[in-house]
Image (cartoon, rainbow, N blue to C red; front, top):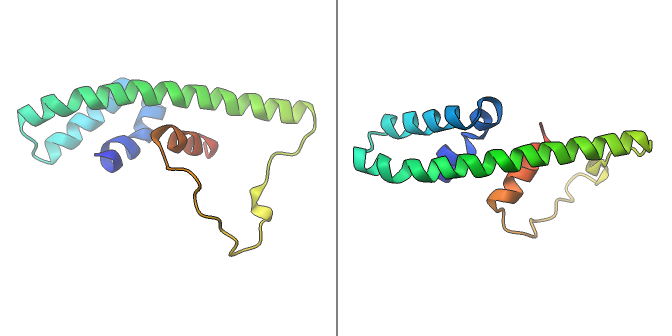
Length: 109
């Protein structure tokens, strides 16, 4: 569910909004052959996730735009973490929560 409904649906949610995301998840559950009862149980979860994630994406996008504007106004070069030597990958220090995942996703948009 997290992979196919939450993560894979982020593009639909981000580009087309909560209603399109809800249709996306409903189509996914129907495609999987889920029973009507199972769909009734899952759709409220996806609906609430869509509202939450859309709000977080909007806030993160605004935050990133503000950060870029401040950096541009102050002529501070944007952060470039690619200067680390190849092969010096550090492991994740935090659990990849939904909020943290959305923050990382918004950094690439």
